[in-house]
Image (cartoon, rainbow over all chains, first blue to last red):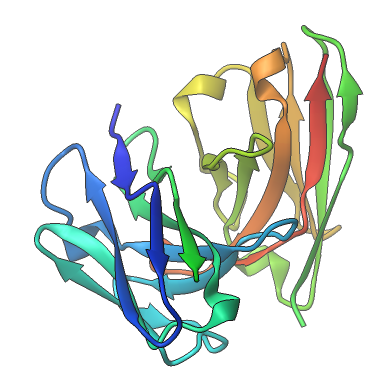
Length: 111
Length: 117
């Protein structure tokens, strides 16, 4: 069974840039995995941020961007704001009998 | 605006059954695939099931295959998840989510808590 791995936690200061990554146990993550990124704050439902590697939702703030980096999917926050403190999850499309798999999530702390 | 409202959660004994519902509004329900995703309290997200817009094609997470059935009633704009032979490890908040195209999920409901105990 494919495992999707994210950094368990990251800490960043306001105004800095941070990159979260999403790796697959099957190997290099490509655009064919159609990476999605979601943000979840305590007590709230997840909110979609990025789809198809780098496409933003209409509500996604401009400081969020998606890409492929070093064989992984990546979510970059440029100029982190205090309100960006949240859990972030990637989702990869793998096809087959179990098409979608979430990463374990990254807890982003803004200090 | 898109709204997804889950219902049907609650406390059930191990081995029991439960049917979750997700009432959709604000979009043409019959033309979009739909997903169920669950989250054990304090843990990460787990994709559970998907159903295509017409209701004939479904996919499931391996850990729940044979125990869950996703279905939909396009005349009622409602998505369902029938869960049988429930186990304590199925305790989670269950979210429904709209398929956003290009293998994505866009809108999510607020979730319904299922406790197996």
